[in-house]
Image (cartoon, rainbow, N blue to C red; front, side, top):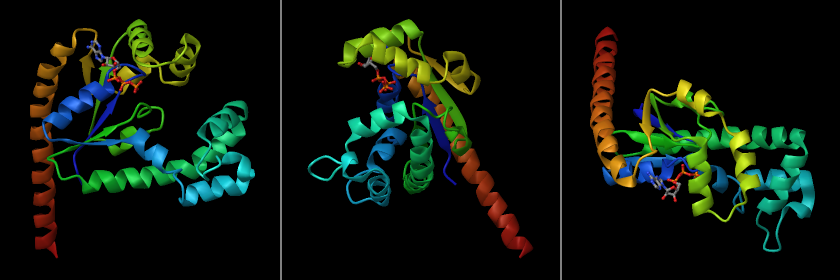
Length: 215
Ligand code: ATP
């Protein structure tokens, strides 16, 4: 099994900025959001199941998922959100596992905004939280996206609280400072993770040798 670092943080905390820095050290990043989006791509079994349940109204003219329609549907009807989660979560999880195992770097990062909320910490050897105050989350998200303050408040309310996330953390990057303060923190953590991943590989190899001798 690969040594997996779970990387998380609330909206606008700096996850992408931090994961880009790890990528710069040659580490593969598996992004749960990207996988979640592709699970409902055109031609997938999940999109066929959605169409069977809701009919053509769930699709745009070109036959792809009408994501805005579905977002509103599950926002208004929580039982539909449960149905969709039951459909997509196992598919997302198995795709995640496949991509984590396929990674060719010394360790691999699983980046997920909802790592804690969706219990993905179970797939991780260690959890790194990118932490900023809610005020900074609001400011940076507003500066980056074309979203309203109301939308940001909704997302903040739907995500784990700062304390819940920090309770799941093994390591924390405080990202209240400048961008240039991030690189040395990532470099130091990267060195630590290389050592931990190497240790895991050595332990598993020793275990395999022991089992081989017992057989
Ligand atoms: P989301 O979950 O919303 O996708 P994220 O956690 O991936 O967000 P980023 O996109 O990395 O967050 O960062 C949010 C914004 O804040 C970006 O515009 C980024 O350039 C900026 N940013 C990140 N870190 C800092 C920093 N230390 N100082 C100033 N701006 C920053």
